[in-house]
Length: 221
Image 1 (tube, helix red, strand yellow):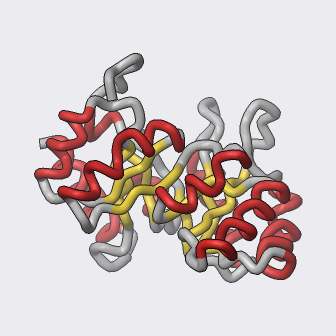
Image 2 (cartoon, rainbow, N blue to C red):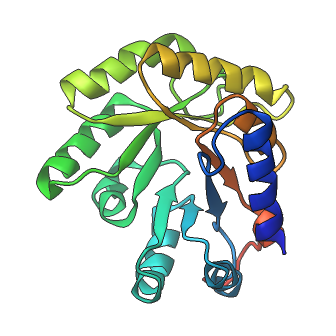
């Protein structure tokens, strides 16, 4: 059972890192997966999922929430400003806050709704031009702006390390930035490296293919 195997590996990594068992949340990344695969994982009792796109989540999770009322869904992909109101309604957490314009839109939406999803700032630790995220040198000022200018409660930081670099270096950098800004949440680690992320303080790991199998593009969702 793939889900059970990942859960056991997470528990073992927590023990190895001298962390309490259960301190790391597993986000099962269900983006571009057939509904039947998602149902299988739901039926095994898992309740925390990650989606990349607002539109895909909107077509999937409202119905699932009727049957599984305690489910939580996190946005782990880029968020367009014109989808902010919908995202605030749909998601329990947003891991990809990465620019002032988005922070302002989120603040406006939260004020109207009176409730705020958990928010993580995405950091581009590798300074890759093609990748979203706040640059490391700008993290402190952006956290301050989110807090003081937009009155947003930031839960933590998120990173997707460069593919051709040792991820532990990026996990360690993210952890230092979080401590410096008084943030406890660290969304880092995926199927290939989540155990290394847990060793360096991850609170949320994002695992997709190791649970569901390879993604199915063009599937009917």
